[in-house]
Length: 139
Length: 355
Ligand SMILES: [Fe+2]
Image (cartoon, rainbow over all chains, first blue to last red; front, side, top):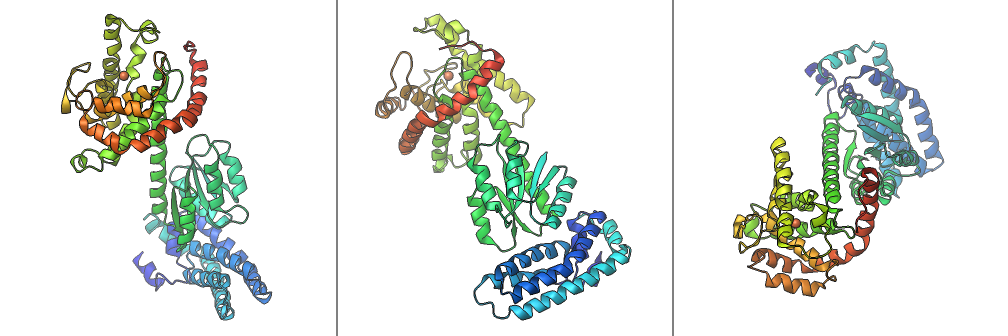
């Protein structure tokens, strides 16, 4: 478990904190896999939604998509992505949405990075998760 | 235990479902507030965990809807908020939520909150059973009115007033106030052992009959004491026992059944004595009209130091305004409540119709 934490580097700013994901799923690896593949499946569409909303200046939609992404990413342990989505949500709700563009670009890039990471992990036959399930699934 | 999970986001819903199942609950999931409300109305859910931000009906509106209409028993509501959203938390608690948890939550936190909710619900169930028992016993001779509803409010009021006095700080705390509210309705439960010809006699009792009538204190106390021996950890049974036994004792030692005086009489008995007399005075009886608050107040003041503990009389004076409010309010809405509760017992138990 200690080595796993080390792999994640900064525990509060991880690309994908699988440790906390397994914990949240209480060691249910089927659920872990289901959540990750659902996340990977919807990633592309989410990016398109975000960009379309920004182009149309539709801040309401932008806020609501960002809100959903914030929840999802926090749940699966995509911490950096959660933070970016949260910023988009906040800023598109406030009046002066000045630098939305650049934040949105970072978010889209982050979503893609998480997607890649997720599909890699899924292909690694979930070895990492299996170890976690045995060691760190409980508390 | 069934639990209803409400979230428009399937990922959150799946995580939530998995954890509550691990904690031994039976989850049902819905994705919006309307469906949640429909299921809650079936009466099968006492616990709800709901997201706040949902399209259509928000979690806060759902809360308000649940609290706004009569449900079959209490529904315990936990709201899920995005982190740092203090404003929603306040709105949610204001709308009647019991607890909240920010997302993403740790399973251990969820488990603690579920445990707290279950505990509260079981206490509520117990309170209801106690009150129902009391109501059933009371119903034989007290056909109309909401005597017990008022009694528990009066005793609660007196106890919470005393809890502010330095000399009671160590005895009368929040738990004491809650216990007396819960147990004072049982004060006359021993009346179940008094024969109809005495309990329901329209005229005055003969001295022999009155002696039998007095035994309602001992009958009630014995019943509650044997229950207390079976469940020594249930401190409410202990207090119920003391109240049943001593609510007719008088400060100067002239009461019954044991002629205790002063602080020999447990505090809860002294409190209940005043509440009982005040309610009898301000209620209509076959042999007397309902006295005004002023008249009842005079009689109670006259009894300070003889019938009543002077300190309790002082507490009564301090919260006099609230007594008047309870007396007035109970005259209207509590009566409705007791009307809807009792007839069902009567029909199922075949109790005799008495006037
Ligand atoms: Fe009595």
